[in-house]
Image 1 (cartoon, rainbow over the protein chains, first blue to last red):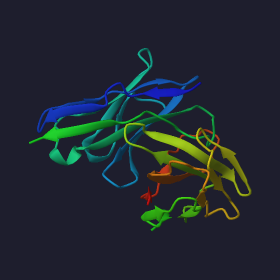
Image 2 (image 1 turned 30 degrees about the horizontal axis):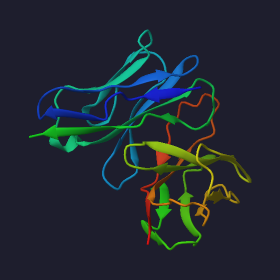
Image 3 (image 1 turned 180 degrees about the vertical axis):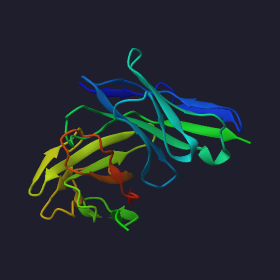
Image 4 (image 1 turned 90 degrees about the vertical axis):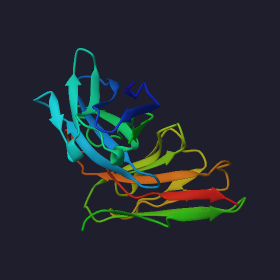
Length: 115
Length: 115
């Protein structure tokens, strides 16, 4: 069965420091991987995705993620955190050529950036 | 602008009452999904539909029903059989593509509360 794990429920970081939100996956074959962000009482907003090619993916709001096949990880990173980055972050995945079968989501990581 | 519209934003359900959540998209997406979000549990799939007049149960379909009579509409009914309906409900859609590398587009959610 496909699965995505986010090992940290909560990540705290000081404003201006680099941030990392971790994600590991168990998806058959080559995966498509996604990061979403959710602000309170809102839907999920797409941040970035990995399809193929360069292992470092750049996305919205200065976020990037590194795909590591050997470690089956897709960690979300940002060089300098902002207070406005505080939100709930979800990692999701889908197997190659699985069409529009539902994404598999991690349980989410709450990021708190402290001024 | 294209997008997904969920209504109402807030819904109060009395004991034993059926209530219907609306989800409409003008993105011409083929697949649509319903998720339930509870604190600390991430997103759980209720139902999904990959084509008009067809839908499949997700992980927590009991107590819910859906229909897909039109491509742009995928309403969710929370029936009286759902004993704990208090949650945030999210609708999403994605194009019908073989590779599956498109992410999902999400609506802004409906918060259901039992009164």
